[in-house]
Image (tube, rainbow, N blue to C red; front, side):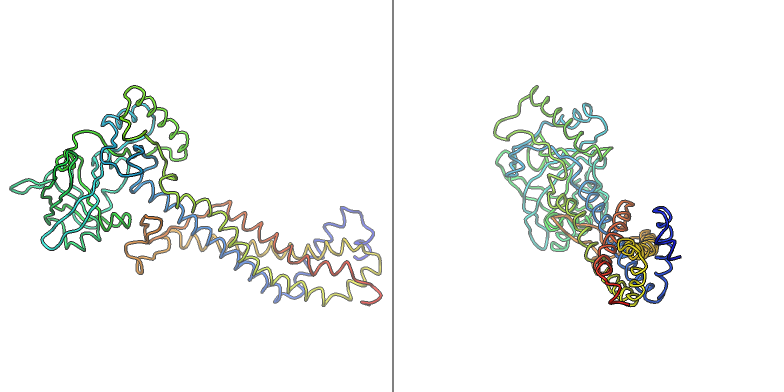
Length: 436
């Protein structure tokens, strides 16, 4: 065998080197098994982390776009900067944009600040008004109920019919409100007068954002106009895309349509220009999180797999130390040092391949087991967790991306070979006469 390894052709040496390396790998099966277990365990952890991170990212995008914000928003600059009550867009823009831009749904919104009073106490509130029919086509905010109903599009059935509202969960707790409770809203109307009216609480919303949860009151646009004496105009147009992956292209189309509408009917100068922003621009913290997710995954993978690769370093150091005499004999009979180095590195390569097979199988199995229901933190966080001004569900789904598994596997193989290169390099410096 040794003569064939020394004198054989180049093509003949490679299979023989691989065969000898595989046999050498299992000279000490316990040590090799422990090293493979460490590497495979690190790979399983990286795969689980990547699935968890991707699931969190998907959940953040869904919460940012499907629950409240929408994919794109159109607002006046003065409203964005100062929440200017008079910085409004024409009412007919919602229908016009839907007609001019394909595969979008548009919902108008209005905002104001006010004072809410109940029998027990008073609180400052943020008032948001929506068109229920259109809002359901854009977001799921009206379905995000903890108690009661979302029937804000029609007055209550009392002897004296009243407009109905939805309130944030924390605000309802602070003001001791429940479905059916009465609520008085007082604000400064658009004409400078004091707007006030009595409302019936139709339902309590689950947490949507920390601010809305503490101060939010949601009503219909009809009720808002009666309260604020703002007969026309909307503060915001929220847009949902049927094809979210075409976000940039659709944003450009909406911007062109808005420019055309402004050219036909110029807006007043005090409110500033109409601004078209996508959800990444509206929620930059979440967008930054998405940009950092790949880097975070790489860093965590390097740390976890790097620590596991220390076992490879120890294994190869011991293997080379035990076989120093054998290496000296091979060098003495004429084996090239580079082929000896290649044989030892081949052992490390096989070690990493077995670890990849075990780790990928275990990682995919763990994700499949946990991925059906996700990781549930509702026992500790019943209302979810808030981050970057938004509230996310306490159940985090797992989403495994094939590219992440492939990258983690290649990373493990590369780190394993690098870890084995240090002790393997000692072979090239051996002197046959001394080691024999």
